[in-house]
Image 1 (cartoon, rainbow, N blue to C red):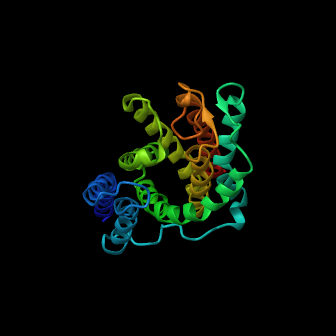
Image 2 (cartoon, rainbow, N blue to C red):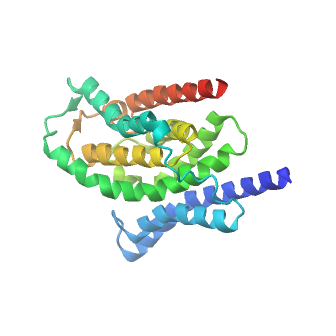
Length: 271
């Protein structure tokens, strides 16, 4: 019986992973066919929604059930982790700006208008990330964790699929002249380490909502900084100082926070 459950879980995880990796490229083909390849396109909607629909079908008809989706908030016992989730991305970005403001990052475009742009980005980011996180931390993460693998290996698998899922629409969020041969491996590493942070908070709280909050704040704060040109990185230093998951400083900070959360969970489990 246990082998049947394990085999079913492996099958469904692989099915979800394959569809997640492929759906963005199908979306790009749709966009190219209709002549619209930009933010808000039909193909991008397909890219965002497919993992969520796959999750719903597998939970309803694939035998996974709904018991481990993590829809409860569990807020009272985890206020500090919700606070970590809200502050992680803004603090990471501000730390990088503080380190690089003396010559490597030009912060003169960072005016009070940033606060209004950031505020306006929160609601759309929140809605988008309910879709995304119900799929990744609401489905793939608990299903992979249930296999009994080492948790860091589980986080790495989830992060790898999550990173590759982003590839078809990177052009919407990344403005770089760096060659993809060096950029993509660093991006994958950054997203895998983010998966550790998201995953450890998911395990500590048994809720998907801290991940929704963390993702919302990250997209609204960091994307607004970069895509709205509130900062300028000195030419040739984006790989080091960009406050996005692919930069060296972001990778180091994310790795430290992920290890800290991992140690907290291991100690709490031991006690």
